[in-house]
Length: 229
Image (cartoon, rainbow, N blue to C red; front, side, top):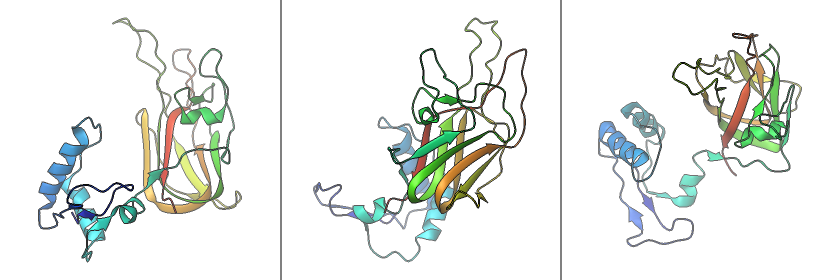
Protein backbone atom coordinates (compact mmCIF):
# COMPACT_ATOMS: atom_id res chain seq x y z
CA UNK A 1 0.00 0.00 0.00
CA UNK A 2 2.67 2.54 1.02
CA UNK A 3 5.74 0.97 -0.55
CA UNK A 4 9.21 0.16 0.80
CA UNK A 5 12.66 1.65 0.31
CA UNK A 6 16.19 0.95 1.45
CA UNK A 7 17.99 -2.30 2.34
CA UNK A 8 16.24 -5.43 3.64
CA UNK A 9 18.08 -7.00 6.58
CA UNK A 10 21.24 -5.28 5.41
CA UNK A 11 20.95 -6.36 1.76
CA UNK A 12 20.37 -3.77 -0.97
CA UNK A 13 18.38 -4.81 -4.04
CA UNK A 14 18.36 -3.29 -7.57
CA UNK A 15 16.30 -0.08 -7.72
CA UNK A 16 16.09 -0.14 -3.91
CA UNK A 17 12.42 0.71 -3.74
CA UNK A 18 8.97 -0.90 -4.04
CA UNK A 19 6.45 1.63 -5.28
CA UNK A 20 3.35 2.03 -3.13
CA UNK A 21 -0.12 1.18 -4.44
CA UNK A 22 -2.24 3.38 -2.23
CA UNK A 23 -4.34 4.51 -5.20
CA UNK A 24 -5.51 0.95 -5.89
CA UNK A 25 -8.78 -0.35 -4.45
CA UNK A 26 -9.02 -2.47 -1.32
CA UNK A 27 -10.21 -5.38 -3.48
CA UNK A 28 -7.20 -5.09 -5.82
CA UNK A 29 -4.67 -5.04 -2.95
CA UNK A 30 -6.45 -7.94 -1.22
CA UNK A 31 -6.27 -10.02 -4.43
CA UNK A 32 -2.52 -9.39 -4.90
CA UNK A 33 -1.64 -10.06 -1.27
CA UNK A 34 -3.81 -13.19 -1.17
CA UNK A 35 -2.06 -14.53 -4.30
CA UNK A 36 1.37 -13.99 -2.72
CA UNK A 37 0.29 -15.60 0.57
CA UNK A 38 -1.18 -18.73 -1.04
CA UNK A 39 1.32 -19.26 -3.89
CA UNK A 40 5.08 -19.07 -4.47
CA UNK A 41 5.60 -21.88 -1.90
CA UNK A 42 3.63 -19.93 0.75
CA UNK A 43 0.81 -21.38 2.83
CA UNK A 44 -0.80 -18.29 4.34
CA UNK A 45 -4.45 -17.40 4.66
CA UNK A 46 -6.47 -15.18 2.32
CA UNK A 47 -6.71 -11.43 2.89
CA UNK A 48 -10.06 -9.69 2.46
CA UNK A 49 -10.91 -6.19 1.31
CA UNK A 50 -12.04 -5.46 4.88
CA UNK A 51 -8.55 -6.42 6.14
CA UNK A 52 -7.01 -3.96 3.69
CA UNK A 53 -9.45 -1.23 4.69
CA UNK A 54 -8.46 -1.59 8.35
CA UNK A 55 -4.80 -1.11 7.44
CA UNK A 56 -5.64 1.82 5.18
CA UNK A 57 -7.60 3.51 7.99
CA UNK A 58 -4.78 2.96 10.52
CA UNK A 59 -2.08 4.32 8.19
CA UNK A 60 -3.93 7.33 6.78
CA UNK A 61 -1.55 10.25 6.44
CA UNK A 62 1.61 8.24 5.81
CA UNK A 63 3.44 10.26 3.15
CA UNK A 64 6.63 8.23 2.60
CA UNK A 65 7.51 4.59 1.89
CA UNK A 66 8.35 2.32 4.81
CA UNK A 67 11.87 1.29 5.64
CA UNK A 68 12.47 -2.32 6.66
CA UNK A 69 13.32 -1.40 10.26
CA UNK A 70 10.23 0.76 10.59
CA UNK A 71 7.96 -1.91 9.12
CA UNK A 72 9.32 -4.93 10.98
CA UNK A 73 8.80 -3.20 14.33
CA UNK A 74 5.21 -2.27 13.46
CA UNK A 75 3.97 -5.88 13.13
CA UNK A 76 3.99 -8.68 15.71
CA UNK A 77 6.87 -11.17 15.60
CA UNK A 78 7.05 -14.72 16.95
CA UNK A 79 8.50 -14.62 20.46
CA UNK A 80 11.03 -17.44 20.83
CA UNK A 81 10.96 -19.27 24.20
CA UNK A 82 14.24 -19.28 26.09
CA UNK A 83 15.58 -20.36 29.48
CA UNK A 84 14.21 -17.19 31.04
CA UNK A 85 10.62 -18.25 30.38
CA UNK A 86 8.99 -20.04 33.34
CA UNK A 87 6.31 -22.39 32.00
CA UNK A 88 4.04 -24.24 34.43
CA UNK A 89 0.70 -26.08 34.43
CA UNK A 90 -1.76 -27.55 36.88
CA UNK A 91 -1.49 -30.99 35.19
CA UNK A 92 1.09 -32.58 32.87
CA UNK A 93 1.52 -36.10 31.47
CA UNK A 94 3.74 -37.51 28.69
CA UNK A 95 2.07 -37.43 25.28
CA UNK A 96 4.07 -40.40 23.95
CA UNK A 97 5.99 -43.39 25.27
CA UNK A 98 9.30 -42.14 26.62
CA UNK A 99 8.19 -38.53 26.37
CA UNK A 100 8.54 -35.80 28.98
CA UNK A 101 5.65 -34.60 31.11
CA UNK A 102 6.66 -30.98 30.62
CA UNK A 103 4.55 -27.86 29.97
CA UNK A 104 7.47 -26.62 27.83
CA UNK A 105 6.57 -29.28 25.26
CA UNK A 106 3.52 -27.23 24.20
CA UNK A 107 5.99 -25.23 22.07
CA UNK A 108 7.18 -28.20 20.00
CA UNK A 109 5.81 -31.22 18.13
CA UNK A 110 5.81 -33.43 21.22
CA UNK A 111 3.08 -31.37 22.84
CA UNK A 112 1.63 -31.05 26.32
CA UNK A 113 -1.48 -32.69 27.78
CA UNK A 114 -3.44 -32.71 31.03
CA UNK A 115 -3.87 -36.47 30.65
CA UNK A 116 -7.28 -36.80 32.32
CA UNK A 117 -10.62 -35.25 31.47
CA UNK A 118 -10.87 -31.50 31.10
CA UNK A 119 -11.80 -29.98 34.45
CA UNK A 120 -12.76 -26.47 35.46
CA UNK A 121 -9.80 -24.42 36.78
CA UNK A 122 -7.10 -26.50 35.06
CA UNK A 123 -4.52 -23.97 33.94
CA UNK A 124 -1.42 -23.40 31.81
CA UNK A 125 0.86 -20.44 32.51
CA UNK A 126 3.84 -18.65 31.00
CA UNK A 127 5.91 -16.15 32.98
CA UNK A 128 8.22 -13.97 30.90
CA UNK A 129 11.50 -12.69 32.38
CA UNK A 130 10.34 -9.13 31.69
CA UNK A 131 7.28 -7.23 30.54
CA UNK A 132 6.34 -8.22 26.97
CA UNK A 133 3.92 -6.64 24.52
CA UNK A 134 1.88 -9.53 23.07
CA UNK A 135 -1.01 -9.64 20.58
CA UNK A 136 -1.55 -13.22 19.37
CA UNK A 137 -1.50 -16.80 20.65
CA UNK A 138 -1.85 -19.88 18.43
CA UNK A 139 -1.62 -23.62 19.06
CA UNK A 140 -2.86 -26.97 17.83
CA UNK A 141 -4.94 -29.28 20.05
CA UNK A 142 -4.16 -32.54 18.27
CA UNK A 143 -7.10 -35.00 18.12
CA UNK A 144 -6.62 -38.50 19.52
CA UNK A 145 -6.96 -41.03 16.72
CA UNK A 146 -9.05 -44.15 17.31
CA UNK A 147 -7.93 -46.05 14.23
CA UNK A 148 -7.52 -45.65 10.48
CA UNK A 149 -10.05 -48.19 9.22
CA UNK A 150 -13.03 -46.81 7.28
CA UNK A 151 -15.32 -47.93 10.12
CA UNK A 152 -13.10 -46.55 12.91
CA UNK A 153 -14.75 -44.23 15.45
CA UNK A 154 -14.12 -40.49 14.95
CA UNK A 155 -11.10 -38.98 16.72
CA UNK A 156 -11.42 -37.45 20.18
CA UNK A 157 -10.96 -33.69 20.07
CA UNK A 158 -8.74 -32.23 22.80
CA UNK A 159 -9.33 -28.50 22.30
CA UNK A 160 -10.64 -26.68 25.41
CA UNK A 161 -14.44 -26.55 25.50
CA UNK A 162 -14.45 -23.42 27.64
CA UNK A 163 -11.50 -21.26 28.63
CA UNK A 164 -10.36 -17.82 29.77
CA UNK A 165 -7.02 -16.37 28.58
CA UNK A 166 -5.67 -13.93 31.18
CA UNK A 167 -2.67 -11.64 31.57
CA UNK A 168 -0.98 -10.10 34.59
CA UNK A 169 1.99 -7.86 35.27
CA UNK A 170 2.55 -9.15 38.82
CA UNK A 171 1.03 -12.66 38.99
CA UNK A 172 -1.64 -11.49 41.44
CA UNK A 173 -4.05 -9.22 39.58
CA UNK A 174 -5.33 -10.76 36.34
CA UNK A 175 -7.00 -9.21 33.30
CA UNK A 176 -9.20 -11.34 31.06
CA UNK A 177 -8.37 -11.09 27.36
CA UNK A 178 -11.48 -12.77 26.01
CA UNK A 179 -13.79 -15.56 27.13
CA UNK A 180 -14.15 -18.31 24.57
CA UNK A 181 -15.25 -21.79 23.64
CA UNK A 182 -13.09 -24.12 21.59
CA UNK A 183 -14.53 -25.24 18.27
CA UNK A 184 -11.63 -26.77 16.34
CA UNK A 185 -8.13 -28.22 16.71
CA UNK A 186 -6.36 -25.06 15.55
CA UNK A 187 -6.89 -22.49 18.30
CA UNK A 188 -6.13 -18.87 17.41
CA UNK A 189 -6.44 -15.87 19.71
CA UNK A 190 -5.82 -12.40 18.26
CA UNK A 191 -6.30 -9.34 20.46
CA UNK A 192 -5.23 -5.75 20.92
CA UNK A 193 -1.58 -5.56 22.06
CA UNK A 194 -1.22 -5.80 25.83
CA UNK A 195 1.82 -5.42 28.07
CA UNK A 196 2.17 -8.37 30.43
CA UNK A 197 4.62 -10.54 32.35
CA UNK A 198 2.26 -13.51 32.78
CA UNK A 199 -0.07 -15.28 30.36
CA UNK A 200 -2.45 -17.89 31.75
CA UNK A 201 -5.17 -20.02 30.15
CA UNK A 202 -7.73 -21.47 32.54
CA UNK A 203 -10.57 -23.88 31.78
CA UNK A 204 -14.05 -22.70 32.72
CA UNK A 205 -15.99 -25.96 32.46
CA UNK A 206 -15.74 -29.73 32.85
CA UNK A 207 -15.80 -32.02 29.85
CA UNK A 208 -16.23 -35.71 30.68
CA UNK A 209 -15.42 -39.04 29.10
CA UNK A 210 -16.73 -40.10 25.73
CA UNK A 211 -17.38 -43.81 25.13
CA UNK A 212 -15.07 -44.74 28.02
CA UNK A 213 -12.27 -42.52 26.69
CA UNK A 214 -10.95 -39.58 28.69
CA UNK A 215 -10.75 -36.31 26.78
CA UNK A 216 -7.80 -34.21 27.96
CA UNK A 217 -6.80 -30.68 27.06
CA UNK A 218 -3.72 -30.68 24.84
CA UNK A 219 -1.52 -28.13 23.08
CA UNK A 220 1.43 -28.30 20.72
CA UNK A 221 3.27 -26.06 18.25
CA UNK A 222 2.31 -23.03 20.33
CA UNK A 223 3.31 -19.65 18.97
CA UNK A 224 3.07 -16.34 20.80
CA UNK A 225 3.37 -13.13 18.79
CA UNK A 226 4.38 -9.77 20.17
CA UNK A 227 6.19 -6.54 19.43
CA UNK A 228 9.96 -6.66 19.75
CA UNK A 229 11.63 -3.55 21.09
